[in-house]
Image (cartoon, rainbow, N blue to C red; front, side, top):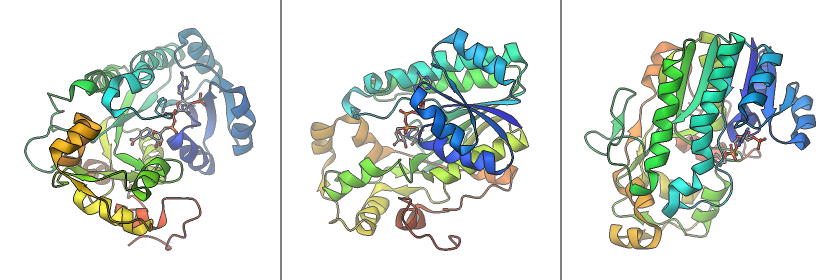
Length: 318
Ligand SMILES: NC(=O)c1ccc[n+]([C@@H]2O[C@H](COP(=O)([O-])OP(=O)(O)OC[C@H]3O[C@@H](n4cnc5c(N)ncnc54)[C@H](OP(=O)(O)O)[C@@H]3O)[C@@H](O)[C@H]2O)c1
């Protein structure tokens, strides 16, 4: 297939491109940075320098590439996290999820592109009621933290726009990424004991290794999936389980414990909810529809062997 990847240089894009190229696909990779053109070419992709918020430039680049499919992996999350002002931190990402999506969809329409795969998210978006693990048909949280309302709205917008478009559209709701380039900040906080377990740590998280997120994306493209799919590993787990485990495998002291009210005071509402009320997400729908299986079926193996490039994985996690 001819595949146009917007967001080709990010954490997921960097893992996706080699998989696409290895499988014989012809990739046009979009970046804003001239300096990234050569590295992208060295991987075997065509590179185009375009800002995803420039509708005309996006339209022209897609028209020139004449792709069968567009993959939207644009976010703007790198930089210092600001959980107290989450929507401010995510403002550029939200623009990419709204206007950026519209520009790519318009370009797809104008160039007769058949397929569109977009990055969505699952985790804190889940309703914080009922069982610990949610599926694609379960509702979003209808009362997100005040600081996350715009980000929630942008995720909803992206998914609705992709599903409403007159092409094969799929939104992949990736769980929380880990792996090379995705977990360094987390590991650093854990090592410095700056990530305590808040309350009972009963909030459930779903993780996904970057390489597994990438392989799910390849399958979504090759099978022409439509609709919404969660892309998560097979062991949603409470913070009270995965966080001490992560500390142990990276050689850190066990995380400290703080009551929820201290968590709110020190870090704010957003991480306190994540750690105490969060719900995980099941990828059963994707596994039933395709033969996709995450290589790292559980974060237990992934945290031990897949956090960095230099880790030595077993032949295949059982
Ligand atoms: N599900 C999850 O847990 C999840 C999802 C996404 C990200 N993250 C995390 O967030 C952190 C940062 O993510 P990241 O490394 O992918 O970096 P990022 O800063 O979010 O950038 C991602 C991609 O979007 C592109 N992009 C950003 N703004 C653009 C614009 N205006 N026009 C065109 N392209 C644009 C970037 O391309 P250029 O800079 O080359 O233009 C890059 O390829 C990582 O730790 C990652 O794991 C987590």
